[in-house]
Length: 452
Image (tube, rainbow, N blue to C red; front, side, top):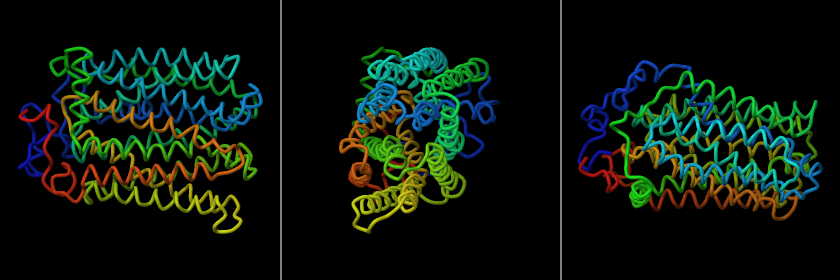
């Protein structure tokens, strides 16, 4: 990160052997075979597929949640723990894999994680009880974390500044297709088989993605840029990152925004199908429409707003819209606005999901701008905070049973308010030193990188 006193223009210039990207960002030092491929469509598609691991693992499974409660003779709150287990595994796995990728490079930890993910997903398909399913989902999440955290680290290896924010929005276009397609596929799978067939399909997808990574994704972290020192050095780097107030603020803001998103993911199958009587296919269509809104907003962010409007302003707008939509959902679910049907609730959910396209990519980009040397550790902290907070939100939305949407709305509104508070209090967006892309002079780097 640049030191205080450098201008935003200076921050986009090369630093030593750091090269500039075609879009004006800063790339990693040359790595054989990477410079020619890093903007290629196939590599971009692979990175998008890796970031699509969470929606593929969870969203394709969502339409079958009510069926799982019947098949395994378990209450809805217990079945929702299968989502929590997967999410908690992804959170903890990122803490392990992120620093490992800083030390040993990106490819080796990624391929190992993908192989374990395939095995765990296949075990989910034959789970004999809900307890076993929760355990296998936890393992699935632990292994699947490799794709999530390393994909972000690879982007940080290759891009910086505005170019990085734009690339994250491009990834949202690709990975955002997963929540559109996944529930639709899940709903259609349930026409010909049961919920176990969903995990068979997920296993096949994992095999295909692993093959693509093996053949076409190059190593992006050169040996001379890898970090030694083992676990102690990794935790020292994480502690230094968390001591950076702005990094912590963006990380927490993104984590609680994700909690609002995951409250929707966890509760919407029951809200839409059990409370409003929609079929699994109707739920899948509505879920896909909401994902279209998220992808569209992400593309507006990357193609129109980034580079023209300060990222902090876009992020503030996204958080404000999420808060407004969550407030509306709470009013609808409590009956303050009178008796309502599915349509008003669906509209409010669409607005909330769309605003995530302005919120999530910018929290990631702004946080990762705070460090060059510990991209894996920074990516791990970003992902772990999001998934852990989301894992807490999952059981809370079902605490009052399957016949009210109030818990979902309460969790979403509380999460949105906490996210906005963390953003304002810690990132201090009005401060001209708040960040490299906040419209003024970039802020100082974390303590561990000052003077570099």
